[in-house]
Image (cartoon, rainbow, N blue to C red; front, side):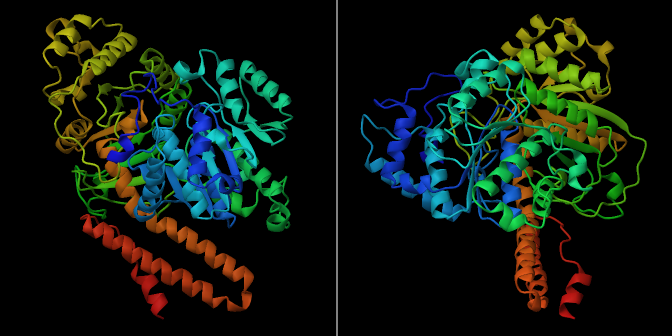
Length: 629
């Protein structure tokens, strides 16, 4: 991680890059690929290249899942990562192993170091990570590579791809304006830069200015550009998209078109789906892919049960659900709007039953993961509902390069239009820093005494002005100078209404600044423990860094412990199905392989969970007995 962090040229996003050397970015990228002897190999990759402002990660994830369910070995490159840099590289739906990551990493690092000159310095971070993606996918011999653009398109490091199979442009909006321009047309021009001559491209409905630019660029390159309608729910044959939110139907529709085009252009469509009516119905593999794709930190719901018990049982089940976190790394106006709509819908829903328990060595106890993008589907516990005092809490932070005067009003107004209102808002700083790359084993800093909270107090000032029209300038200036937020809010804070706000006396009843996220979560848990009738629905948003930090990071780590097993089972079921289809006379064999592998994986996952002091009832006696029989 130290080596990777040394490649960061900017102390914070928005700073002027100082890469050095006499070559442009894409020229350097081609030279790096040549040094690593990857030029011809990259040209041989069958790539789906996707750009856009929002939804490109989800679209790529849907594509990967569809293609994997169709029997292809997939490579997925996305950014950014939440916890561990290895999340950016998925092989067959699973993050690349640490052993393989280190092997490929040092191979690339050492060769590039040997050829480092003043004219050709080591690549900046994202360029290196992109080169590494090509190295991994070539060496892993994937059948298809799904590549998400990092920033923009035309000048992005991934745009060394000369002949993708197909390109996609997701929904466009105003983001990264410091680099891409201040108009939607300028941004669209950057995104259209991934178009390649006569290579088909697909996009979703865009505002007219953006669409005009996309079509203009497509015509110049003789690119057949098609506009894709959102997928209709009835096309799923009763299944649900695994990624939550109405906006995901647009991403799913684009993913379906990209995959169909990939199959057709690689000569696989008729071979694989000759029995399916390609236009009227989605093939079964498409349905499986759309209903099982998973993406952490986006529209993710987590029940936290640490205030009551570490075990799911009938005796304590009724105490679960008091503290519910809604995680979404939305950080642009468009994604904040989508996040607000999603949150407003799900908090009114009844599907809030916990399914699993996990734990963490970072002080994160008993976290029940549910509705993780719909990816994990387990039997629901029957929970006795009580009349609870329900409070909706916002935990927010955004990077300084973002404009909170756009993000926060958008969040408040969209929620309010659906009848959703926050009782309290809490502003916390991010633990992670822009100039340091982290992994799953990175140490979370515990020293928060030196944290500069001026940005958080500014967010609080804006919040009070938006929601209540209260001018808190003098109060917050005083708090900042005093070091502010040295103590946690008193317990009564959760129950007080706006009438208790008294800026002149130094007290705000509707918002607070707390110096760390783990401290905030501990305080919320303590509040719930003291009042079992309290239900807190906590939206964490504004930044992927925030969602990836601290306890949220622990959630993702624990999710990987308990999801890797089930995810491998999905893959094994696919293998068993293909074996049965190819050799019907050997029908008992796939069943034996399937069940035996599931038992082995479940035992391994259970062992991991036990080592984390978790109770995860994966192994069922009836299943074991049937296998023995």
